[in-house]
Image 1 (cartoon, rainbow, N blue to C red):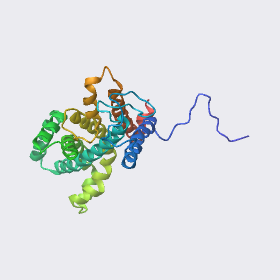
Image 2: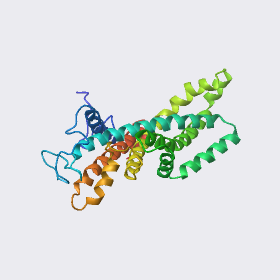
Image 3: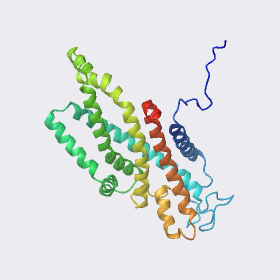
Image 4: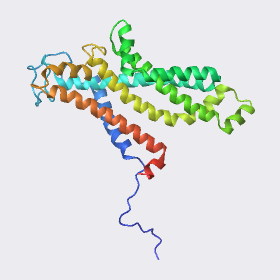
Length: 285
């Protein structure tokens, strides 16, 4: 008799990778390829007026032209680069500040921990976009780097609070007490025990923060506080297309679709990372 296992007709093999992770990775990967391609090639130069005003999509201009006759596809490709640069920079800065403050708060005395927790709650309650606007407005002028700084600082409070909660949970474990008794100093405990155990959860949060950073950058650019021209931010493209949205709607649809697709991809990617880190979520569905 054959020992081959019998699989029921209704049974489906389980994928080793959650579908949100695959779909989100494809969407984010597509924008990454477009951003890298824009470094070496674009259909036209970003500031060149190469067509008529507010032309629709065609074989010559795949996404049409804007109110000055500039190619929209070129600007959308450069917008992908700006969105990813701002997202990466803001998340990296927020992670550096937030993880540092969160770990210090976990090791702090009860009084100092309460003060830091209250300060983080206040910063989180303060609207992120408004805080970013205040930082940009108080600087010398709007630029790509001030947008990264503003969004990174604004998002660091959420990272700090999450890091504090996770680190305090790890520090309450019995093996941390054993490590301290054995003579392991606090920096060693952070490096050996705390950070390796909290990174999986933090990475999921970083993916979500990336999407929020992309939206914040587009919002700042829409208000004129983001990367200045000739940088073709999606938010600035949406602002410029506002006046002609009824006569030339594709000028707003194209950058809007680019923004939505990247944010959805990042959110799906974060959800997929969460499922991969916690397989019980997948089995419960």
